Every structure is written in structure tokens, then in C-alpha cells.
Length: 329
Image 1 (cartoon, rainbow, N blue to C red):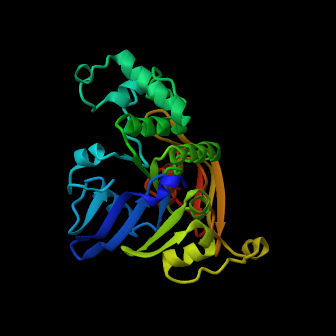
Image 2: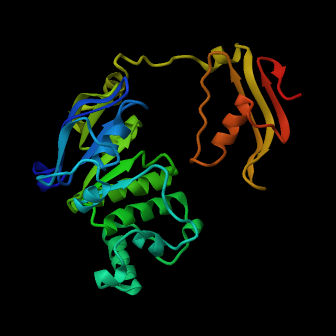
Image 3: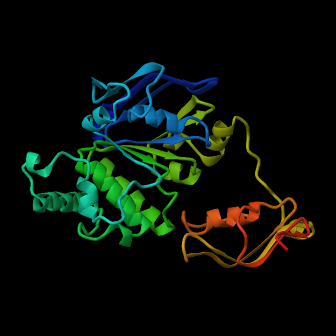
């Protein structure tokens, strides 16, 4: 945290939002300092997305107010949020793949001739931002040729190009490899060192404890705790998220091996869109009482695998058994 962190970049006071009978946000008050990383932690459905959608002007709160750098923020106005210096990087990027990096960054801004800038000037400004914040990317490359980590850099640069001083990062590591996540964490350090403020939305406890200065925990639409990083550990955060202690699971592999097979997938092959292969030679076995984790960067076959297991997509090759019964035979 920088020396500026005592001054408020953002203040949310008494924010409430209801959708029919669902109270998505219940009287939430939060403060974000300058040069601070505030983690917004909670299970799916805890109210995180609703809260930041209100902040960015996508929703209008039923009650409460927002101040940005000491000025009131008009409700329900994304343009006002942008003008106030708020930038948001969504988990699923909004980039035009057929356009170049520079074209994506300047898309939606005021006409370049009104800004007194030519395309060369815009490219120069983008390079300056890239070097200042360690976000290396070639302005003239097509977005279609970029990795997920590079595409995220473009989204961040879009926000910085528009003058963002507060960045909201929504599940930023969900689409990144571990190496890309490490690069992002280093970038966050540069941001706060230069006075930017970050809201880091996640449900990954290890990441939150690592990167945040403070951690705000939401549960069922309510703010249940705000902790300094030094006072937080994963066990305590997990308990705050779910409302009760989360005991460790001490089930041995030997115990699993003695249980009956509930699901077996053998040499699965499935095509995705067009001729692209979504799954190729995938095999797995799940026994009773076992939790099998599927790891991988978003878009690398997880949805196809789920579709196969739920029976909504047929195998091109391979075999699926559920409860000892062969499906699709």
C-alpha cells in the first residue's frame, strides 16, 4: 500500500439492491484507499457482481450512495463512471478479434481528430502506458493472435487509456495460466506503487491473501467482515464465506479405491465448433465419495466435457459409463 492510502479513492455507503424477492446487496458500505488493493471475496451468488455493476453504472441501487475521489457518482451511468476514473476488466473479454490491439484500445473513445491525436499519437500513448505499467503488447498485432494473458493486458490498457485510476478486476485469473497469473500479480504491484486503486474480485483464497491489502467478505448479499491481510488466513476466510467452519477432508486414496466406480470416460473424442477438436483421447474415472478436480485455462474443453457427462453432446469416439451403464450404446 502506498503513502496515499489514507485518502479515499472510493466510498460506498449503504448500498442495497433487490431483484424481486432476492436481496442481492443489503446495506453494504465499503471504502477503497488510494494505492490500495481491496479484495472482494465471496461465493457465487454472494452479491459481488451486483455490487460492482452498481458501481460501474450497469445497475441502479435501491438505496445508498457512491463517492469517487470525494465527488458524488451519478447512478446508472457507465459514462459517468468512466469519466470519474473507474475502469472495469471483465472475466470474459470484450475484444474484436479481427481488429488490432490499437484499434481495440481506441474503439469507443472520442474521435481521434477531436483529441488532437492521429493514430500515430494514439500508438505512442499506448506504448507509454505499456512501458509505464509493464504491460508489453504489440499495438499492431491482431487480437486473434494473442494469448489469454495478452488479451487481458489489452483490456487493462483500454481502461488505462481512458484514464482509469480505479480498476475493477473481475475474477482476473480465471482465464490465465499460473505463469500469466504471476505476471498479473507483478503488474498489480506496479499499479499501487503509482497510486492506482484496485478492486480484486475472487473466490480463490490463496490469491486473495497474497495480493490484497484488505479483504471484504460478502455472504448472501451482506458484508460480513473487512479484514487487514495480516489478520486473514484461508481457514478464517472460508468460514466467513460460508458461515460455518470448513473441516479438512482426510479421505485416503486407498479408501477411494475400495469404492464402486460411478463414472468412467474412456478415450473420449468430441468436435467443437466447426472442425475444431474439443476433446481428444480424454479418459477419467470417478468413484463413490470422490471429488475429481478438472484443471485448465478457460476454453480448453471443460464445457465439452461437461456436455458429454450430462448427455447433451454425443461422443464421436470413446465410451461413457454412468453407474455401470454404457450411455449412447
